[in-house]
Image (cartoon, rainbow, N blue to C red):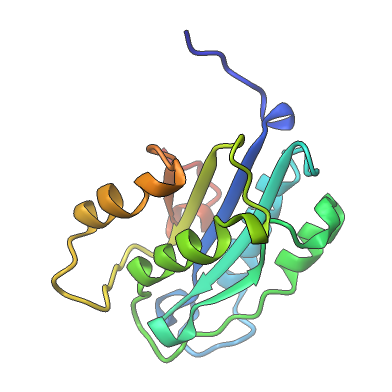
Length: 178
């Protein structure tokens, strides 16, 4: 039996993995596209009940493998929605001089640095990654197949088909992603 739970009552650990490569804004650090991406993330966060026993939110910004960072963790911001949206709004655009983001590296960072108990991950809550990307994917190792990476790496953190990808160009036009 599958039961639909409205977002405001969901219990989940959600990490946004957001592309900040040069394909988003070029080298313009005050780019409107980046601001629109952050506004979209905040619009999702505002639909959730953020709290110790409800939804927790983390954020990974990525470009190149050397320009991937945990902007905040699942247990940051005192489990307070206003503090989470403020933290999202303050994420700076950083291209890492990369035209295409290294998504595989960013997902590895989410898996090994966000979805851990010391950073707020809960065994009893599903782990969800929401990827916002401009569509280009680069891997630090060409021997890594994206499909193989998902099936082998995410089994250990109970991430079962909960990776949602939204091309940024759709987000910027205001359309919902499928």
